[in-house]
Amino acid sequence: MSQSAQEIAAVVAEIAPVLTDGWVQKIFQPTPNEITLEVRASGHRLSLLLSADPEMARLHLLSQRLPNPASPPPFCQYLRAHIQGGHIDGIEQVLGDRIVRMRIATRQGLRSLIAELTGRTADLLVLDAEDAILVALKNEREKAGQPYRPPRARREVRIGTDGDRGSGAPLQLDEKMPFPVSAALERRFQHREEELARTRMQQARLAEVRKSIKKTSRRIAALREDLVKLDRYRGYDRYGELLKANLGRIAKGQDRLTVVDYFDPAMPELVIPLDPAKGPQGNMDDYFKKHRKFLAADREIRPRLETAERELDILRTELTTIQDGSWQPVYPEPAPLRRVPPRHQPSAIRRSPSRRSGPFRRFTSADGLPIYVGRNARENEELTFGLAKSDDLWLHAHGTPGSHVVVRLEKGTDPPAETIRDAAVLALLYSDLKKSGKGEVIYTRRKYVRKVKGQPPGTVTVTQEKAAWVTLDRIRLEALKERSG
Image (cartoon, rainbow, N blue to C red):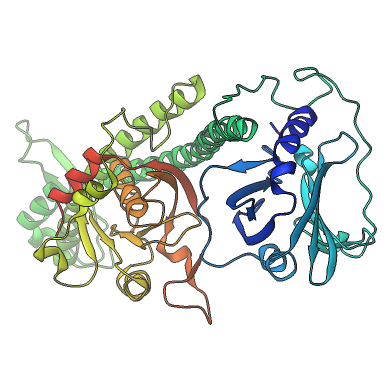
């Protein structure tokens, strides 16, 4: 849920005296719906978050910088060109509503950065001195050039009533903090982001499990049908042996032969169908060939059927846990571990002579699958578009520079859960998110990764990706270290 009007009033009252007369030094866009402004004010560098996320629209100061994409999106580029370097003349809440106006003096004149923190309709806009819209984060083409008209002011109500779409819970302020309102909001929304990430993961996994159940069920039905079709060849070796003992009795064009079945202790007569177009030897060879086909298929299909049935049982069990609410994300928070000073954390990935030999960092997952990690941009390019095959799993830390990670998979197979966990932890470790110890990792098949023309090596676009929240698990890293090289 987004900030309430009262929470916005409180945070504006806190930050306006500090940020007014400050200078906008840097602008970032860590996610599609958020921007951060680094402001130099009163001898301090402060980071202000403005989020137009439909689920968590908000505005407050940050205690630490957020990870950012390698290249800025268009909206961020515009702000850097026209707002960065500007002087903040004032910050105010508009008509007591969930709208904040930041007046900034720039080289082109006075500009207003508007944050409409209105839930699903949230947006960020830049206005000129006459309040005409210059650019908007969302629906830019529809809004650009139009005069700005703020939404009708909403009646102020207490937090928690139906008329206010805020959180409903009062802020827990720590007056010892330099900016207690911002600190409380940052804690609250960080918790919500993690909850929302888990909810999205659960919804995505639910759809994936249902799709996999249908796919696996169809595969099982096809395998069973193949077994039924081939089962009629089960006794064809007996037909072949009986024809072999009676080749001299078969006349050309004959469509059946009655023989004594000496494989049966009762020695009954048995009628064996024949192909009139084939001679005695051809009919005998045909029966032996079909029996060999039955044996080969039985050896191959039955293990595949048993594996598919086990997979279906696992999927159905997971579906039940999702539906009853006991499901846990693919990357659950690990049990609390003793915090290791940053200078000791790389011990889990300390290089050895064997790891330095040859291209890429190399690991083996808990399931015995090879994992490759690029060391630099050139190796990222070579790994993704040279070594990796189309069905291999590809991973990367979301929205921040880092290594490409590839898991080698057999065609038509899905990566085991433990292997995904191992590879995702490595993707987080070898990225700019390593210091924070947690973050989002995206993963997809290699065939959905494309080069970006005109960009440095290793720059890619990704489609059909999935995302998971990952934390650095020291125990898992130690196990990967033992299986490295």
